[in-house]
Length: 231
Image (cartoon, rainbow, N blue to C red; front, side, top):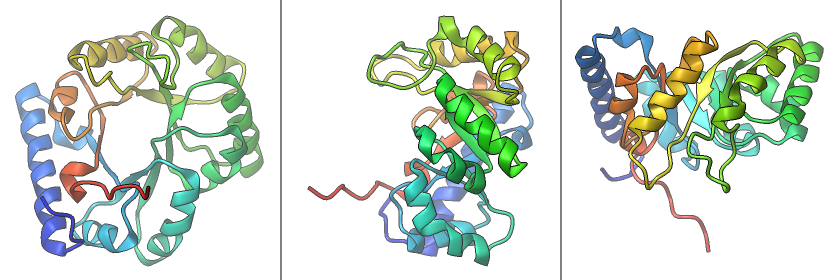
């Protein structure tokens, strides 16, 4: 699929993803309305996002606070009902901006960030939906709480910082089959009474739905290939 920013491209990609989600839910015996499609718009320009909004999508994911601040305010003013999700890492010093801008944060992964978010939640009187990121593959280069530390971290979120965690997020290692990682995240969520699971991207969201994903993060299958970074 070419990235040309056209309405036809947006409609084709979005419709295909929605149909695949519905089929995966049907195969898993789940209600498709229980799965939220987060359209990952990071690195895509406003002109490429607008056709996706026009096609009816209302939940979008961004990787960086600064990028979201730069491009989303006019879109939020022009279109009702849009919810922004932060799916990338969050620096503690960006907590205030994140709480102000995002409806959900998928990358809660350390106690210093818990403290920063708790301070801003109390100050602003609003709390985004929070997902704890679990590093299911224990990859040293990747953020996230290790699986064996997840239960204690979730208790600290609740008991120490009074943060109402809604679910877990995971990104399986590229070199491993994702099923075991989705199953592990689902197991941790279940034993901690968490309702939501943010897992599955363009290549594997149908499988993630089989394992209970409630939020799937899809960019390429909707928008096409991402623009190459400048050298």
